[in-house]
Amino acid sequence: TTIELRWAPPILDGGATVYEYEVIFSKTKITKIGKRETRNVEEMPPVATTAFVRVEPVAEYGYLLDELRASTEYSEFRVRCKNEVGWSEYCEPLGAYETKPAVPPGMPLFLEAGAATSKAIPLRWSAPLRDGGSEVIDYHVHYVEVRHLTHNEWLAEFKKDGDEKKGGRGSQQHSDEKHEVKTPVFVPCGNQT
Image 1: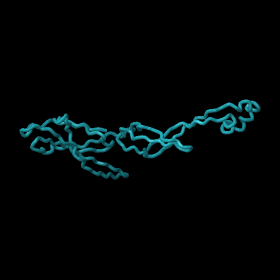
Image 2 (image 1 turned 180 degrees about the vertical axis):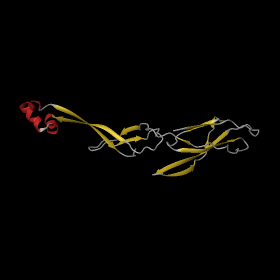
Image 3 (image 1 turned 30 degrees about the vertical axis):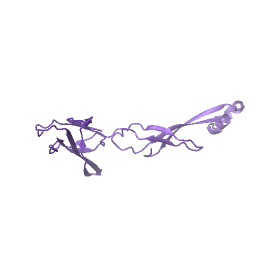
Image 4 (image 1 turned 120 degrees about the horizontal axis):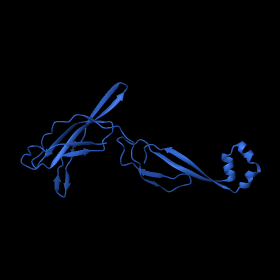
């Protein structure tokens, strides 16, 4: 979730090259309970927008604020600039802008399995690069359990009483036959990585 800001350089630079711009803004968290709305305004830390190439600063006339929260109001955008003498005053503030609703996050990264025991296989992963504008609150693990059963084990587990009678003596003829049973498993595991 992003907001792109653009501005023009100052008309008067104070007789020295402007080499830095700084952006400040506020974030408003809106909580709704029934018909009541509570607004909690938080001033965000200043953001320096200059990039340095070797030792020379490159002052751009805009900046992309990213990693913002979805469905959140951002306001009071103000910019000031700096030359070798010091900082200017902040410009007049912009109004309020609300970011779009959250979207699904990217996929988790670097899935790996630890040493398996007789009863468990530990899994580890990293959070996705993009959270979709909202905190990741749950991870789900999906896997397929594969079991190899003899024909008699398969009959005991999957055949109904009526089906076994229909088979008669013919079911005994396949006693050395093997069956592969695949069972999809879905496990919610919360916000753990």
